[in-house]
Amino acid sequence: MSPCSTMLAAAGAQPELTAGGWAIMLVSVGLVIWLTLFCIVRIMRETRPHEHHHAPLEIDTHDRGEAG
Image 1 (tube, helix red, strand yellow):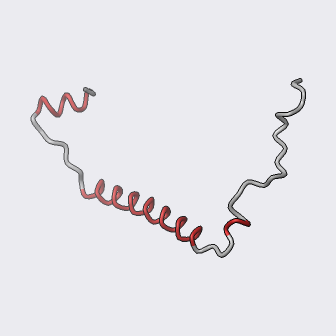
Image 2 (cartoon, helix red, strand yellow):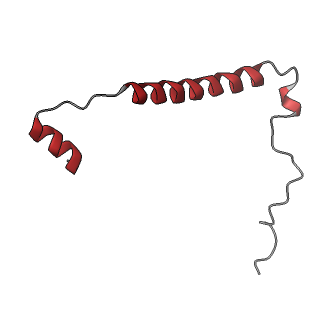
Image 3 (cartoon, one colour):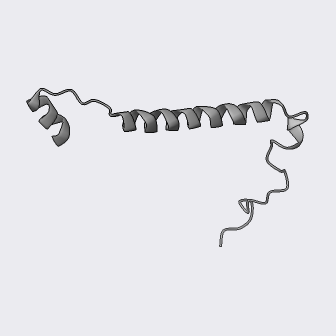
């Protein structure tokens, strides 16, 4: 157990989230959910995703030549 949880257990107190903590948590979770949905909708609405959402075949990784 961490020192903070040990002290709380010894005191018999349950840690509670303050109003500020709830606000920060709800805003951050909401932003993550919104960004995820935004990205999914943007990709799914694409008329021709095969033209944009792939790695170009011209990439030269330099892994077929001699080491050196």
